[in-house]
Length: 167
Image (cartoon, rainbow, N blue to C red; front, side, top):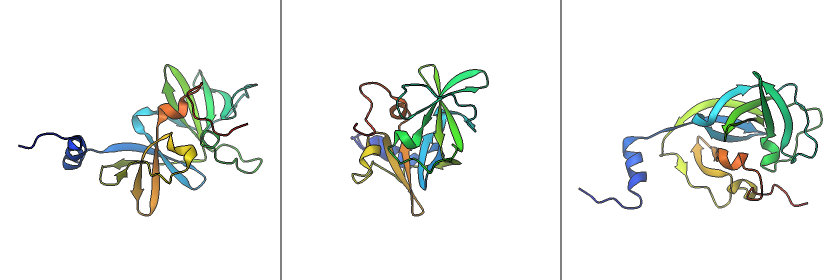
């Protein structure tokens, strides 16, 4: 029997075919993945109330089944330029962190993908610098790249959060 090395867990995952499920979301043409165990809802954000002096990625507050939810724009959080004026947010993903509910506003929601380690790669060094700290890795899928996002990183606010742009 072999002794375990630093790649032992990764090798064991490949041999057992361990898979992870991701909800795919789109910002423009770019496809991102969110771990399905972090996703609580998929909904159309309506009745958003702006919050004065909030960070630019905070769209506002909304009511989701009786709960006040902070709506955050993934496009803005990733430093992607806004779409043309009058474009309404299409969908939102309900996420929870630390007892607080967030609605992550995205351009679209795709399907749930069950992916194994055979398509997984570490974060590429040439990935957009604004996304590198918020990504856990990528999956190469039939000519498309699925960037797996760190939900905790996306929802992090305060002095340790990566700046989307310098003022």
